[in-house]
Length: 254
Image (cartoon, rainbow, N blue to C red):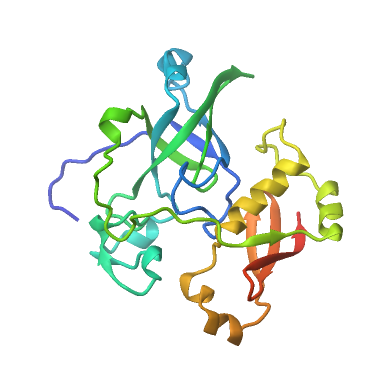
């Protein structure tokens, strides 16, 4: 920590509600991978709707946030991290990565604007393509400007291409019947149906949230039918992956 006595105080402007109550399963980037919904609930005095006048003219937004669950883990600065894109083994400099283990725990995501509303005394900014934990503090919101924020000839190091969906997610008839009987928490968008829940589960698991070394054929052979758990809203989903890249949903529990 610097000896400089100057302190920068950051006052979060809101909190984002998302389907993710744990880190496992969160897409490693935002809108480029999915349309997963989220809503930013603004705190007073930042909930004044006038602060968002004109925002509907922009299709995409940058959100700056705090990796609030990484704070305790980054009290001791480490200059090197292991990016998941490199299999979790090779080390890179923290400033050459988007790791959550950063000196000031600040993250940023590009999301798609959906709508802004003032209802029941709350201002909610609805967005799509979220990659944050539920209840993550939001520091700032800025519009995405295409001519300034996009460079076609940019070099992207070890992250040249976006991850793609690699698993075929399978739901048995019993699981589908069970899914139809379950309810989700209050921050689930009320207009969403069971089909939307199934699509969300397929999107998250289809991107294969397993650690990179678990995806290796030799690991799968040594650990057949290994169960994995993903929490989406209040639902605990259990799945395993076969050798043909099929993810089998075996249980969904509230």
